[in-house]
Length: 366
Image 1 (cartoon, rainbow, N blue to C red):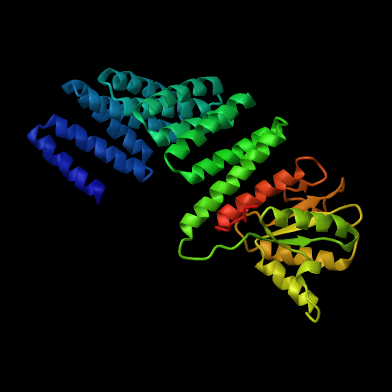
Image 2: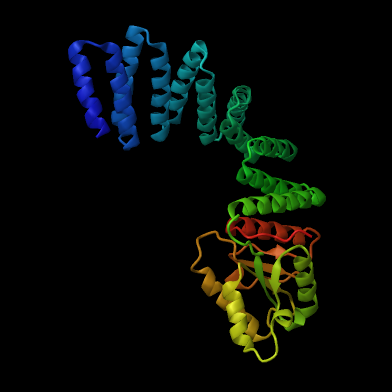
């Protein structure tokens, strides 16, 4: 419908000789065709629009259409051509003092160079875009530039500063989701740099912000704690008890047979129901348990069957190694956590906190 309208408009303005309106109609038609995926048709219209803009001295229209033309070539994978037109657009946009347009053009140039793996050049443009976003108060632009700069920086200390900056602006703009994502990235970076104390600080901050978010989202319903089922062998009972105690103290509802089962219950049925009602399954693996009682393996199978009906990438089963043991084949595709390492428990809790946030569960404050 839009194309039909603009084509009719183009005929009318051509007949009356209104060059400005013809240029506008060409631009709108180009955008419409680009939206429909007919990029070559869009390019032809943009080029005609640029000719008219130059002919009548419409500098702003020329700059905007050069940006559209650059994007069209970028969508076709012709990145070098895209960069050429973005650079031409940037000259004009700066000349007319369009700060918002300048920020967008710089960001697009950064994205184009990043696609060519020219990271240093991309970084240069993202930093320039960030400067303008800060100057004009564009929160979304700041976050987008900071995310790229943080995720691609080989200097982890610099990356940390970028994510800390994201937290700062997210708090000011009350965007808890972006704040939590930045904390999660900082957890990863601090673990990688060996600063486990700082990593755990940010895990606790994720917990605080998540609980605050959940309270806001669930003001009319009662929140419940994140439920975790502790799958373990009787041979690892002491370590399982310790893990159960620790996680319960940190605010999780952890199911373990000796605490939850009561005399007279059909224990197989109760365990199966507990697995089905849990938000996450923690599978304890050790050199003692790997070839242990078959019922533990039945619990794992029940959990895996349930996991098959979950979206790709959903955190549900977390293999927890208690010592240096090879993870069973059926669990190898899942990222495990080594609880025998100093940062193991912190990494496990980070995964639990992220799961709680996603499901709208809470974690009891200790």
